[in-house]
Image (cartoon, rainbow, N blue to C red; front, side, top):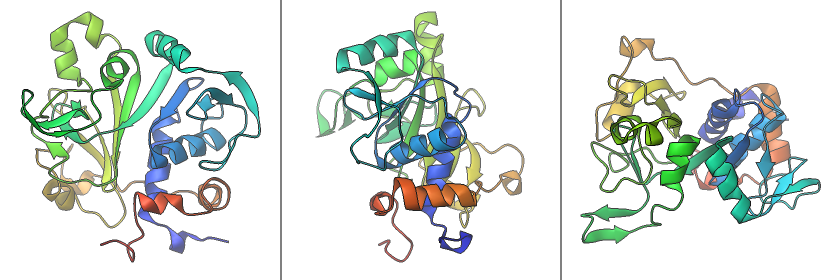
Length: 262
């Protein structure tokens, strides 16, 4: 049996992601990436059993299988075209990745460099614009660094609150950048003038380390010492993570154990 002494940063991140979904109620959770998938399934089994989850392809799941395992209980059909209906309707919380996030909460997954002649072409904006103006949106960053947290993104894929407000009610009415979970801490965009704010730091991480790993100012309410530590997964959550959802330790591919980190 695992114990609290076995806790890893990946486990803490999974619990922090689960917490981002705990108050959503009956809503379609759309995690993109391994840790988001783990956190959403953890929330489904603990804090929010009403979450609606899919296999990431075309099926709503009644059960909660381990990561990348075939579903044993299916309760509905969600082909890709119907996903767009849900996106427009809004009863959805998506957690996306981010190549860049800026101080204003804008996200970039499209390209790096000048818009007319980028240095690196990435995914393209994909569903980020529609997600951020229609649905609650959170971000997962497995490697918190100054290249990810920047003063201004090169290209806006996901729209932050200030930019949405400037675009008018059609963009701002449902814009809701909820949480940003990284391997160092948890942030939101409720700092001054809707900028990045540090909500907690993971065990063993200091506020100064978060600042040093960020290329833009990160707001802190009060003194640095007022920033709490991200909560630890409960014993039940640890068991679910390690023995039910991720017995193969796939999460360590995104957030390595300290002894395996380079």
